Image (cartoon, rainbow, N blue to C red):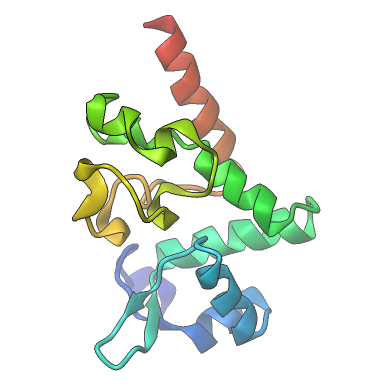
Length: 152
């Protein structure tokens, strides 16, 4: 199936296909999942399926590692700076008690003890996970939101 016929968030790519498109081993893609950098959809049998959005996120991760000498910890910290509360209705008591708000421990979709807003959410469907994050937009996502808060 040509990439252009696949919906952006439709999980149809196997881990082998993703690894081939990235030029990495399947184990490398599994490691990125284990580190919480990507959230593949899993079938009832446990088979991992990825969307074009996941593939783009993984391409950015590979670029950060290969071209910009970032490590996994640095990438996780960078993703942790995305102000998820901006996409979840703004800062409220729930956000203030959430470790994602006060700590740079990793992407919000990788944190277990989140606030009530997110506790029952499917992170793959969340606006924060679905942001068009690539190596050219991440700074705008983090910095742009921070600047908007300072102006208000």
